[in-house]
Length: 452
Image 1 (spheres, rainbow, N blue to C red):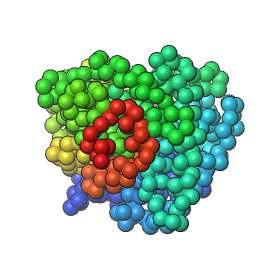
Image 2 (image 1 turned 135 degrees about the horizontal axis):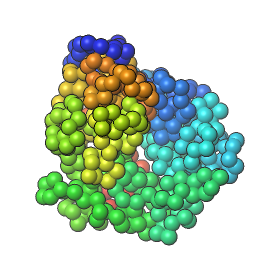
Image 3 (image 1 turned 90 degrees about the vertical axis):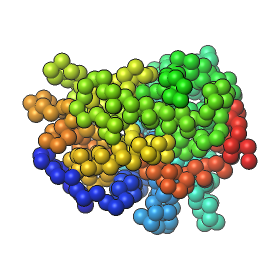
């Protein structure tokens, strides 16, 4: 086991013969080891004490079948953990009160107490995080298809059907889904629109067995696409700074060969769009307009992640947790902090540049950034000040600031997307899901596997 605690002069550990496989195995172990076995809830982060993230729990449900297929967990173990998770969410109290509840209208709060499973602090009832949780549940329902596993399939469908998507529309004249709701103040004013991870939400909402949204909701989400195009010719793509927007939906939905109206007009599909976006991240690192240390053709990747601190040093502004992306793109922000998940979880899109990037991260920074559960969440080679107060993590001689935590939202796409690249496991199962097929068709997708 490689150490993740080095702080100076750390040599690179010997590279495993199958580095990508080692990354996936270690990252899977995060979900296997750190979920609460009694209720299946995953912590938002570890080892820092943490509440549960329902989205990370959705990624955990996606990881368990992958672990079965790779031989890292038995089917019985995965079934037991999955059942504990689904039983908890089915029975968790739902209601409009500010305390004593896990959710409302079929949705769940963004963060839950790890033990009791009730709303944490004053967090929002989250539409997108519920969608990520539901995607994991639906995949579990597709995977566990044996006669003795019917309860998993039944609970996944019941929890999904309970979500009142139309209730979440009412705050927006264009019928788009609000980002969240607070019992204290009502709906979050900002709805989901434009090219973001919200695409998964709309696919699930349009395909729902009850309370399904109409095509107008998806059209409203796409209405701001004209502002998001970047590049010309073969580099032209719908852009969003944080790379996770190109990954989250495609952790579950195979976008190869299917197109909605926007992609038919563009002449390519969302998978190709994400390939171009992955190359754009690499090109940004090569250009390195901010002059950050370490950026190169093989060291790149910006997405939401931890950072060293909200502090200015030598005229440079650094941040703690933030949604990072190339400057000039929607939601672009760059302070020199690199998140390995941005590159590694893009493996299906562009393996010819992601595999060298993964190898370079391991070779150059070694166990300073690679430990028990794979790559730590983030690091910043530019931030080397030992005098500045940092929010978490440590300063290393090898990689500058390095996070001490693993984050579930960044670990999850690594496990799922490596598997999609290697075997297509998640995509293969989800192509047959009636809700996914219905949601895509109602959104106007045609072609490819959707027509078969």
